[in-house]
Image (cartoon, rainbow, N blue to C red; front, side, top):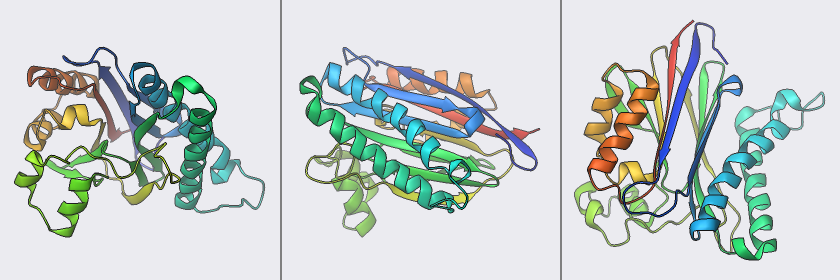
Length: 255
C-alpha cells in the first residue's frame, strides 16, 4: 500500500522471553492492505496463545468485511474511522462468542493495538496496554494511552510517571478484548503520515523492560526494520525478559 509519494516496509518479531514457558503474543503484517496488528493474550498457556492469534485473525477478517471500498454502493459506513471502529466492535463480539462456547478457552482475553494506513493518514486503534509509537525526525512519541488503572491515574494527573513505574496496579487492565461483563470498546485516533516516519507496535513485554529512551535510540539508529526488531527484543531479554516480547516496525519510505 502506498501514499502519493511513499511505500511501506515492515518487519516483526516475537519472542517467549526469559521467564515464560509459552509465547502468548501474536502479530500480523498485511503490508498490501496497509494493516498491522499486535495482540497479547491472557488466560493460560493454551488460552492465551489462542486468544492473541484469534484477535489478530479476527481483525483482518472483520476489517475486510467492513472497509468502505468493499461495501455495496453506497456503503453503509463511508468513513474509514467509523468502519474500523465497527469492525473492532464486531471482533470483540466474535471473540466473546468463541470464548463462551469453547470450555478450554473460557476466560481468555487479549490486548490489541493496530495501525491502518489510509492514503496520507494513519488510523490507530487499541485496547489494553500494548502500544503504538512514532519516530519522526528523531523524536519518539507514544500514540496510545495504556488502558490500565495507573494509565487512568496518569491522565488525570493524580500520579507522576516515576510513581507509576512502581505502582502495584500498573499492570491492571481496564479495557481489553474479551473483558468480562462488557463489550469491547476500542479507542481510536488518527494522524497525518509523513515520509520517513517509523512506527512501532509492541506488547508490554518490551515496554516493561526497555524504557522509551532506549527504544528511541534503536529506532533512530538507521538500521532496517527487521534488525531494529531484533535489537529491541534482545534488549528486553538482556533486561530480564520477564514477559513475552513482540515488536512490529513499519517504515514510510520513498517509492
